[in-house]
Length: 487
Image (tube, rainbow, N blue to C red; front, side):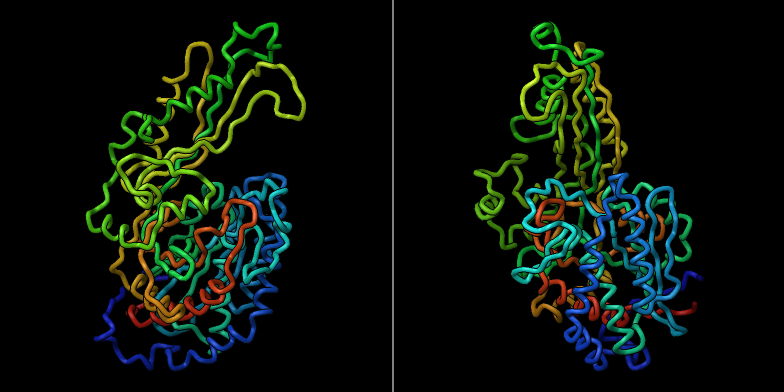
């Protein structure tokens, strides 16, 4: 496929719209189809949620494969052509496309079908892989991250093809099976499919509204550097009565290392860690302060007595635009019921750092490794592994894709969206920009309290069906702003 030139026009100088495919006047049958077929759409979503496609567990590999096969079939069923499963060294990528012989903008839709482990299972009100509807929400692992959100686009495409017989844009879909483990094989897939992937804009739905009833467009994400730290002491577990007082317990050593990673002001103590942090502009800081935010309400919703973080920054600044370091798991020794007096041979922790624009993941991983080694006393040995990384991303607000998304959100939800950053990470965004020159629109429909990565994950059904309508309007609006010339 040739890399076609494109001309971006404002709405005022837009060419005749009649020749550009589906126009707003013709959207009625498309939009009404969404309303008529809600039950059928939810039935299909339940089937997708029911597949435990947990990418990080080797024992779930067959389920991840089954989910890929289900999606490839579904893409064909809704009218996509050339739907296929692309094998990688890890979990597969599912692709599909729709195009006709007209000159239309090229849109790349990305989603990920792998999900986080559901544990602890006892905290779920209903089984994590049996999608359950209550209080106008659908509960289950993957409902918002990201099966339910990318399914919005599949249903928008289906509504167009069934209601109008065409789409106003050419669409390519890629559904990844490794996002939750850092997308280790995505770069190779992108490089090998570079020509096919070339598009005018990409869209990802994997972010939340700022608040219920406050539609949002995300323009920035933090990156991630995920490390594993192992402290080893004696060559085997020891009896604490016989050896306690003579051996430095690896659990204690690890705890001491972790305790020294922050100072009393909440700053990360790794030398050089903040050197490349891009500061917020005055305009952004002012914009953050104008958002409807309450620290007291946020603390209350989380069930904590008081918030914590780097001194000198607001909570939103710390959540969206400052780097962080967190310990996600720590283990060693005897953890079963009952008692066993043992000094363990080793202790392990998983630690990640959310990074911001201009911080380089590989550099941060090296800084962390050096610092952890210096903090380890001579009474033990420490080894550090980098499990995966992802870069931070910023999306330009003055672009045809973001402008189209803003109009689409307004039409679907009845109010203009706010613009926000998000603390999470989506590795493909920077890859698409670096390798293909594609800007990404982050058009998310989740909610801040949707329990992504936690028990009782849910997706609000008003946002889900409103999201389908917004996606329909987004495709239409995008076709107004990008005119392709010369295939």
